[in-house]
Image 1 (tube, rainbow, N blue to C red):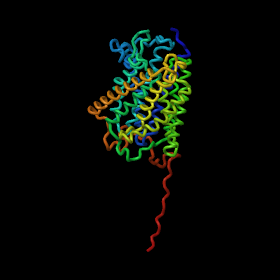
Image 2: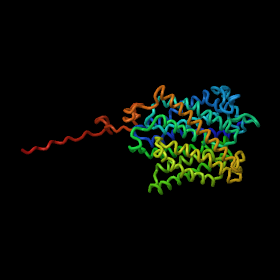
Image 3: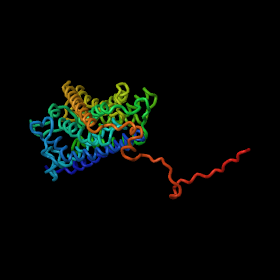
Image 4: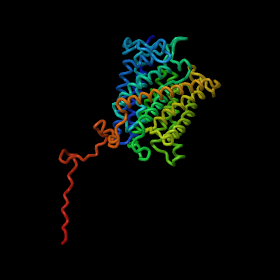
Length: 443
């Protein structure tokens, strides 16, 4: 098939947008952290790019989008190991007209940010080396298989596909694959690592709310590539996904700050930033299957539900530092299940009709199966991975290092240098303090 230059340009742009989301996440999580651990928090996102990016090229793409033979319903194979044979300009055999390697690069950015999302749950207390090992093992044993279940098909009528794809569960851009997956993995990980020193009695407020807002803005900007780019072409499907991403996110941000105002008496910057992310999460699986008005309804529900869900950690006693469970797991579940109510083939005939479009409960049932399968598999395997790493090399820093701050103990750096500047080192050097004569002491 001839390469479609317009769709290729859009997909290259979308790939860059989605990659930008991980540095945006670093700012979002970094601002929510305490000052003594902000660098470590941001490093966890950046090292996820490095590790998962390499793994994707070597074998991750092949395991996710390759044919696994007898096991192809559950995992791919190694036929595209190292992307050998994909280096030319051949297009993907899916009618999109984009080069195969553009699709490879686009999907790599999804794997990267899914791993990075988990890190927010374990702020302040994870060994950096253990996290690096976790990123590789988790991507291999959890992300690649689940993405294969949901998104892989050989493109042939009556051909092979992942078992959730074959079931007919809908996930346009990653509600199950990315958000529920990362959110429930975060829950498993915090149960292994335990609570931060002093939590929940000591206040652990965000140290830099402007960072949080900057990160939320970068995530929203990049998310248009995340959702609309998942159309794999520059056309009507990308357009509806783009508009729905805008509408649902606006609604969720508004719903969150209304809940805050009614519950706490004030609407906060942290609240509106969290609402933005909750809306982005919830619309991700549904963005190409519902109407813009449906997107507003979905966003309002997701924003309100997630605003309440982030408080569950205090009632249930798990220390999810930056609310990965409350926003990503819960938001992903809300978005995936609401497809069963709001989806309509009037928007996308590649989908199905939900309850409100006269489609009956069948689609909702399929969505529930996809949600439950993702929750069960990701939680179980993540818990085992974390336990093994903890037994072999230790996953948690010691108490003294945690008290001192993980930035200085793990990275030999601090985000902010408040030390005085020596006098006499330049025009901007601090002037020496004037001498003050001692007062005469009266006899």
